Length: 398
Image 1 (cartoon, rainbow, N blue to C red):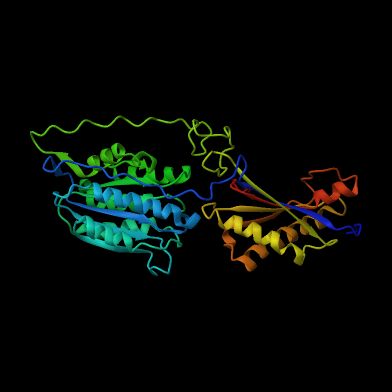
Image 2: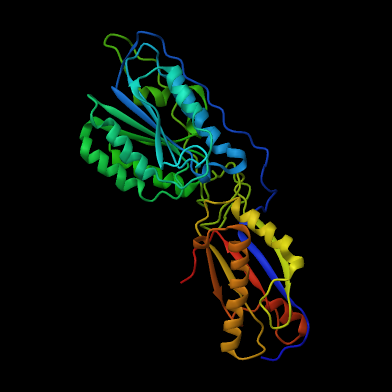
């Protein structure tokens, strides 16, 4: 293939990681929850046993483990809301934690034992490091074994972002089949992840008598009281129950990005795009030049690859990232196809070998000269067409 000796301009565009609209709030703090308060002597226990399953996987560790701490704050508030005069067996199980904490997929850090608020909190304090995979299915099956020998009714409460745990609904169905009407399953979604909420809803549906909710619904004291009463409490005969809190407002999310319309500053976001807390897509663009007829990344562009890798690691919940290589129209179709594939793979290899990005998340494709973004009639246009694009948060084309 013959080309001019001009340098090749490659546009590296990560178009689905998106900080458009005004960017992310890097300093957002973990969510705080207000415990409910119930008068002593007015309630009996609705269940005899309960176990909280808390997600400590890698996707909970973003931004200084903010979502992990939010989940721990939520579990602590539930624990402190359970009336001290109830007799319950309690447990706390973590899953997906970093190897710094434990090499096991899931650990029972408290119980099963006679529940005390102090004992549960001590177990919660042992969960310190997020960073592993998301084996909620394994944690559910282990919880089923923990509860198998207990008497009476049991509740499992899953606190998780619901990401990357497709085996969980099947595991929930299995333990439900084994325990029957002695078990109800409840899920609480952490963070604004639409796909995660949908999966957790399936887990709760497998339990048949439980339900799915979100962390946002439990922030207020009234929301926490409603949840704890539905899961743990039944009014004693002859004691009038407390007035029910007002029903939560059903928010509309027209574009399905996980952010309700009244908070969404970027409506009509395309389906599948990951957005920030204001519903706005995030975008990062980098420019990398290649030598003539080469697919090698120049040393001076190491900082650009570093920046792309750091940005990709910031969003581990994204399952696939498409790396698309392109050429201009000079040369044969067959040669250009191979050259576009080499360029895409050079960027992919740099992200894997230099930065440890999971190879399964990086899909390299070559498109040859078939997708120009500028005219091929001028040297300047041909330079723009010789490019690589990194596209995240979309469905990988077949």
